Amino acid sequence: MLVIHGGTIITFDGTEHRRLIDGVVVVNDDRIEYVGKRWGGKVTSEIDARRQIVIPGQISTHAHIGAQETSRYMGDRRMRRFLRNGFLHFMPNRRDGTPSVYGTIEARASLRFGFAALMRGGVTSVVAYGHGGDDDSALMRDVAAEMGIRLYWAPIITAGQYWLEDDGRVTTERDEEAGLRELDVAAEFIVRHGGSDSGRFQGLIAVDEFYLSTPALRRRAKTVADQLDVPFTMHFLEQHREFFETMSATGLTPVQLLEAEGVLGPQTILAHCLYIASHSLVAYPVADDLGILGRHGTTVAHSPAAFAQSGMALEGFDRYRNAGINVAMATDAYPLDMFAEMAAATVMGKAAARNYEAAAAGDVFTASNLAGAKALGRTDIGRIAAGAKADLVVIDPNALGFGPAPDPITALVRHGSADRVSLVMVDGRVLVENGRLRVCDENEVIDAVMRPQQALQAAYQRYNTEGKTLFEQFAPALKEWADHAS
View 1 (tube, rainbow, N blue to C red):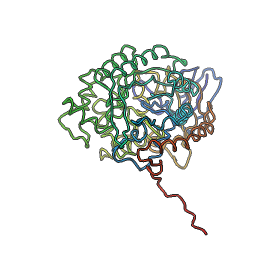
View 2 (view 1 turned 45 degrees about the horizontal axis):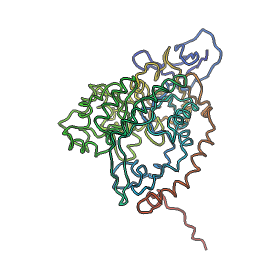
View 3 (view 1 turned 30 degrees about the horizontal axis):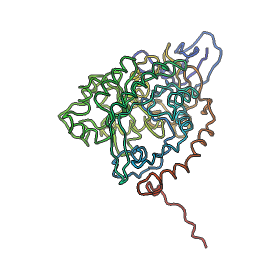
């Protein structure tokens, strides 16, 4: 038996989290054997977490795994014709055949970086979204298994694509038949591989995205997900245009349309879900989108840090939860950091509501674990309780940037960071120890994603319709030093 001596242990009493001071967590193989004040049974090894905080492994309900090599260049600069969207700057292929810049990225190195960043920040379970390289079926699973993380993933289903035209416009094409074929591939993949890697790998049906999909594909995808008893997820209402174009075409809000299609429910995860009818930039008060989502117990995967960088916020965290929506935290994009997301969730939630009591720390913290487990239909992760999986994170608050923590969860949500994570355990296996990854060489992981940068920059200049370099298109925050010495 492995005995962890706390500290402050955030336990689960069957209904909600509780603080256990100076208690112990006992781990037997991949499960938690006991949680309480003292343990009188067998001890084979011990971890001293006194003066530290022990929390359940965090669950990210939506993440694009990788080093985010392209979006790092944008900073405060964007192409204004793409409005607030970041992915359209790099993703579409050129109509003339020039590929996007993603071909310069070394897929395995990027995935290893992404998984390493998640684990280093205390994420033990993740819903991964997107492609996994040339051979999705092998690469994503292999890297996740190497890293030891708990992964939900299957090849994504696309029913269309974006094109970058020669004049710089982005246009779209839909292909429902292609999407239905990819749905069959994803279903077969889940049947073959779901439950592999000692149960740490699970499948789900992921449609990319509401805007490019069709009603028939969404209905069929949700039916297949239900038949396989796996979650159904898709990007939803992260673009302003999705609301207005759907209203123009159908007379329904996108949420009303999903309800009519029968795709909402407890195992449906909608990534982002910003531009609902009541959003201030939509201002369509005659539809109760929040009420519809809440009645169906739908999950919203909330990634506030990424959208805050685009000047956007969910309106608002408490309104969604009070409507009955399962708001779960996610680490959509760079820096793939749940602590950054929690800090953004509480700050942006208060700002959106103009209420300092909004987006309370305890609710945001719960969204990072119990809400994620609920979205995945799991009662054995996201909590520290006897019988649960031994997915644990130890936080060291003994630093100037953290300081005294009379209320550890408030301090953690506001001031936590990946640098304060001292230990991460998944299925009873220690993956991070003394603040360093045990499963890989961190320096090697970082170096591997640095190498392709020159090729990426060259590819972007060919890709850009005006022939601009990355730094011409996305100017750095400061100008380069110019040596004027004679």
